[in-house]
Length: 209
Image (cartoon, rainbow, N blue to C red):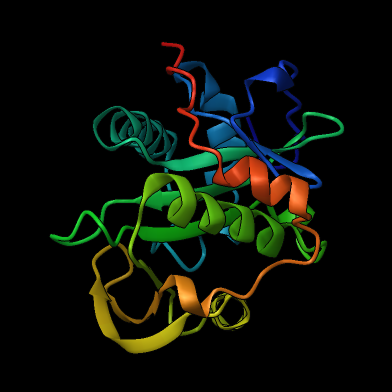
């Protein structure tokens, strides 16, 4: 499926986490068309994969996300517009380094949905979930040195620059950041009801294989 398509998925009751506009669920093996629409978009992968991703590489990425959820209870969860079920990207966590208490945070938004505040809203919701439910003590994040938008987003979220770290997929040293709970800058759109729901321990549904 090409990036021009706008995949819509019904079954919004599968959301295990939700903000004002965005719902989170787990990746499924049947989600390859969604994964291809997202990670097959050169605008999305420009700063995270030198030369873009083939369909085979995207399928491998999807399989890794599913396996990461199975083994660690986290992944870059697919995210959808809560009102319509349209897939708009992914946002979440993955293991990083040797400390399971400090996973890596990331968010990828389909280019057709840029500049609507979805990245910050989804990130704020996922960060609340990471500290309140997953039990993370800190979050790591990094970005391509040319990606000014990601730098701005991380700063807006409260991440603090710590060092540059080599990132093999791009062959570059990426500026790297840490966020601890005391630094979190809340999203006003994540109202008290949504915060309470995000802070309630609740296991995501098992992946549908």
